[in-house]
Image 1 (cartoon, rainbow, N blue to C red):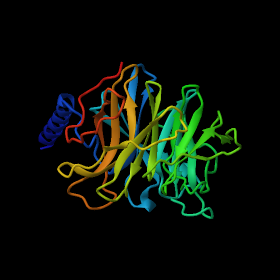
Image 2 (image 1 turned 120 degrees about the horizontal axis):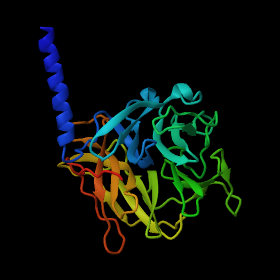
Image 3 (image 1 turned 30 degrees about the horizontal axis):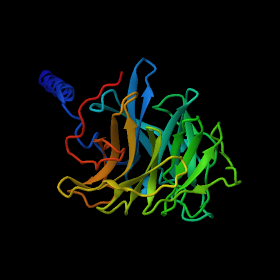
Image 4 (image 1 turned 180 degrees about the vertical axis):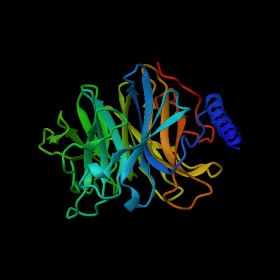
Length: 330
């Protein structure tokens, strides 16, 4: 009997391994579980080569959002789960609602910017924090011992942060909920901010229809600023963008490029973008809600190809169940 059970287990493992290796596309969702607000990025592997990483929000009731998982892949198709890369046990001031991690490598350290506690006023404890680790898989620990931003500046709730490295090496933090977006110039050690020339620390750059989830990238010398519109629990959650010559805009809204398809999924939004190093090849990582789900927290992480037209405008993204083909990194 024991031998039969062992044979069954081995056959299941063998089939699972074969299924992973024989996958022609990533499929959507990329991995099981309710995950939202994904940040996709490419890091060097210490053993050689590069890897894709995705850091999402654990999509659950706020009181249960006390950690982040991460996922890594060598080809966008097969993903490995790294559990609890950050846990609020290592961030004394964060109690709930840890959201939308944004991560960057600097000087052989990995810095994760995150929102916590969903504060509703300047009188509450929480906001945007920073954690640090020696490896992409953590463990991440609180870097400052307090929030980096814990107040409402220019009406922006301190959530949905994105750290951006400009062409000149300067790091900026874009963030903001409640339909306001700010940008601030980070100190070189990420312990605070450097005032702009006019003395201000937080500069508002809110484009039309902005709600939350800012993201920035550069292509052909132009700054592409992206954000989410609509309500995150609704079917019409979506992503729009603007293009400018400066990281400060002005950002004139061009239009939506990612939104629901009632035949595939709803609530497609809060995204990030990955560029294949050295190539004009782009992917958009985002979350959406399956047609079978009505719970606002039931969101899945997906990926699609993102392309541009001859004028540099982003073509509308087609959301799929198939996802993308394997794209190994050199």
